[in-house]
Length: 210
Image (cartoon, rainbow, N blue to C red; front, side, top):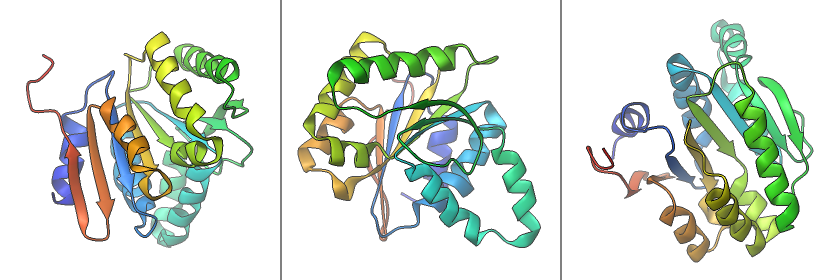
């Protein structure tokens, strides 16, 4: 699947309430897709919220920022100020406006409390976002263990999101195959980005769910 078709799918086929996985290898510059291609395009369509676990999104943004040509630097940084950011874990967000900071937890009660806080905070924004971008959840699973995935399933079953589309960037190389399978199972579509290109792992056919 060529990059243009991948972008076309994410910008044209994704609907509110859907979760899309963008699985990536550690050896590809995913910041070029996340920050250069998708984030600006999503912001043209509406508001965007970023959920950044453990500062992974910030680190990727720094990689992207270093590559910006001088003539585009100020323009891009000004655009990124429109992002609303929810930090999960200690980090310094070098983009957007931080609207909430949460302490990561693999304890089920604390995880659900954080998830409820996150959903309420987004619901109180002046306008509902079109997209939510998620960074660092694979790393959160890696450090937090199996309980993190179990808590995610419980949270989504208890308080589903229906008002925006979620695009989650997942470093698949830090997860076990069965963990990836669980995430793909609850996703509407999944793509895998490697040095060889973009593979369709799962995709919703046009017209399904309508």
